Length: 390
Image (cartoon, rainbow, N blue to C red):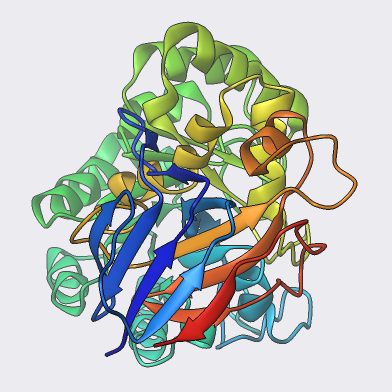
């Protein structure tokens, strides 16, 4: 594989909350991995990118997406949505369940749910639309699954299961708790659909009591997807649990602000994830993650470098994936971006802090340049990175 030297970076955001900004102006990439980060690196490379003083961040990870069939989404009858998300800075998608297959019975029976997870996992393992890493095959937890089913998904590398259609009137029989135990013993994370009924109309309502009973790892769209749980339930989860909490573009913005303020006051930034919960009834939203970062940074008044961590390093950590961090030895997934011409901000981070979207110049996934010059989904940045071959 080729090598890339990125020089003249203005600001470098790491994706790590404990150290979100790093004093560095250069990144050296080789064989798809970040090999060195520093000041004035002089490595010989096949390609050099002059960042021209703009900002570098890790590739964004959509913590809550609904892929179905390649780049086609039946939910909105749209094509090429994953490529468009990549032009919005998204380098990885985490499936919250492949719910939108035409004719899929909802809720599915156990064999159908398992089959959908297996097929979509294998398909997206064999397909990387525009290089985007699609972590698909999330098993929807319904009554009747066996421990052997969890062995099978573990062997396939599936890393997430989700409660959404499970009949919570069955909780006294202990099956749901067994699912959580079987998943955790195999290193598989557990997510729960929270809040009110989804677009399907058959998902199960979940607030504090259900979350407390099941003890998942991740609360899907805690601020609404599209309708949130009661505000007091959300705050109790933030206060009384250690679960990761998703804020999604498709949710309730008042509750997102309430949670952002609580997170800031109680230093709970490490538990927040950002997703879109799309494609779905909200549509296809290529700039969804960028918009949510801008909202949390400006209206929620959380430092933009920390908000970016909620859409990068936090997501990788929550899902047990080696992505979302810009540091040596990690996959070279990154975005170069800057203020849009006309913005009153001085740079990308200040753009987020003021509620403006920045413009994307470059997207790199696994050390391969996927967007160069400018994105098709953001206005052009005031300054762009330039490329040359050595």
